[in-house]
Image (cartoon, rainbow, N blue to C red; front, side, top):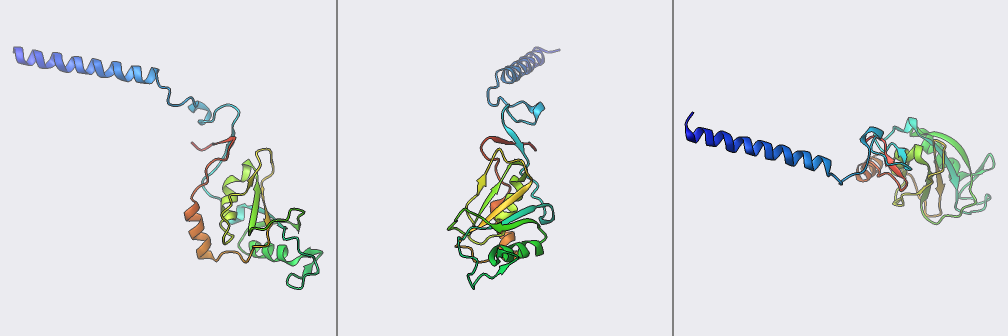
Length: 190
């Protein structure tokens, strides 16, 4: 072996050893994340939520409440089965779109916006789909970490006009994308 070839082998060998040492030190001293990948990346004390894929309407249970504060004898919203027509009408529309409709009733909360959502950890992704149904609904809603059921509550407000068309809903879902995990939670799918 010539002197030049021996020198090249020595240099390459030294570079390989140095690279291995750097990689080992980087792995050992990594402080970038304290998440345990064995637990799905969720730190202790955080609630795991699923934020994707977004569920289909047929998989989402919705409760509809009238929070307009309007009297039940308002001629613009006829009463059906003791429930003001606005909540019943929206419930029917959501049912026609494939949603599973649970409760439909008056709500003591008076709301001035279009619609306000209330949901828990089991329905973070579902709430995003429900939110997209409402034109002008830009408020993320009321996430409750302690809520244990699998439904999304919709409180209709006095600014509510109508549900979005299919095109508007699809555009809103695309605009919103997959939701981020709310405070106190972490993405179970990471």
